[in-house]
Image 1 (cartoon, helix red, strand yellow):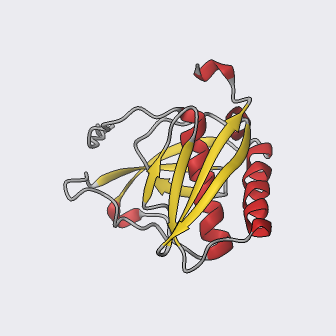
Image 2 (image 1 turned 30 degrees about the vertical axis):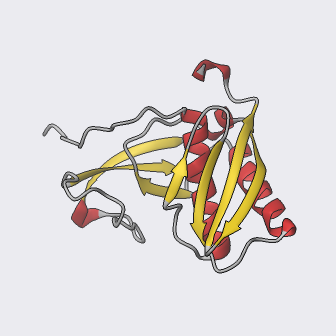
Image 3 (image 1 turned 135 degrees about the vertical axis):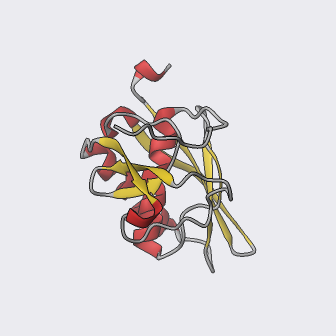
Length: 159
């Protein structure tokens, strides 16, 4: 079997929050037709993702996003990886955020049948390990909608 060579990953994520970020991104794309978060900061205590939107979400829409993310978490979907070459990407994958020197082979992270994207980060093995997703605040500034989220009761094996 040929050895897969990937770029170095330069940060260490908290797996439950990073996996929740993938689900949040998939939810925002599905519900509002926006791109995945361009700016994000994922940490153990709180995380934030910014989305290019023409307006802030309403309180009702925010509640629907939170519920949709928790519904995916409760499905206890497997989180898996596959290696693919750039000419064999799953449909709809945007590579615009990859660094110029990204390898020809990419590591795709799948959240069951719900979301897929290229990623070198750390993730949970299945979504139930994430815990309860809670949007703690939002803000809107010049076309950028920020969601700040926290996780309640993530799997303690992630420290």
